[in-house]
Amino acid sequence: MKIKDFFLMTPKKFKRIMKEQFAKPEGVAGDFFTLAMNVINFKLYNAVYNFVGKDEGSKILDVGFGNGDMLKRLDEKLDNVKLYGVDISDHMVVVATSVNQDAVDKDRMFLQNASVEELPYDDDYFDTVYTINTIYFWQDREKSLSEILRVLRPGGKFICAFYSRDYFERKKQFMSEEETYYSPRELRDVISDAGFDNAKIKVVDSKKFMYCLVCEKRGNDADADKTHGPQQL
Picture (cartoon, rainbow, N blue to C red):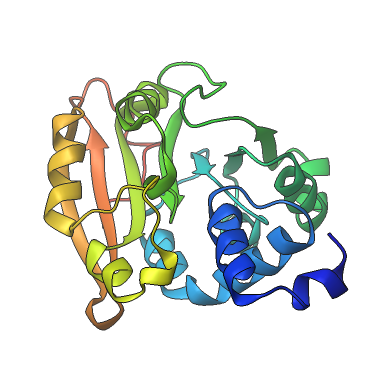
C-alpha cells in the first residue's frame, strides 16, 4: 500500500485496516499504527519499566514488540541486561532491528519472528517477560501462557500491560469478535489459573482504563537466584 492510498481510505476500510494492524502490523499502515501506539501506550510503557528486572545480567523478553520503541527505551536506560523480542510480523522485525541497530549489532538485543504460542527459548531462561496490548489477540491463550511460564526462571516476573474491557466497550470501533477482552479481575483469575503466583493488578490510569498485571513463576529461594533476579518493587 502506498502512503497516498493509506490516507485516502474510506472510514469503513480504515476501521478494518486498523483492526488488522493492531493484531499484526505490516507495511506503511503498520508503521503508522505502531507509531500511534507508541504515543497512546506511553503510560503503559512507564508502568512496565517500573517492574522489569534491572539487576546486572537480567534477561528480558518483549512479546509483540511492534516497532521496537519500548525495547529501545529499555536499552537506553538499563545497563548490563540482555533484551530479547518476538513478534509475529516479519515487517516489524525489520523495523525494530533498524531502530535498535546498535544494540542488535553489539549483542545487547536479539529480535526474532515468532509466536507467543511457540517461544524459541530454553526453559527457565528469562528473569522478566512482558507484553503490552497484545493479550487480546492471542488465539490460544492457555498455550501462550504456558509458554511464558516455561521460559521464565523460578521467581521470574510476567508483566501484562492492557486496557480493560470497559475501554473497548466505550471505543467500539476498536472491538472485534476475534479478540478477547478482560476486566482486571478476570485477567488476574486467568493468570492465576495458568499457574502464576502473586498476581496483582496495578492501576496505571483508571480514567483511561489502563492496567498492568504483575505476577511471578512459582519457585522457592533455592530456585531463584536473587543476585540475577528481577528487582523487587
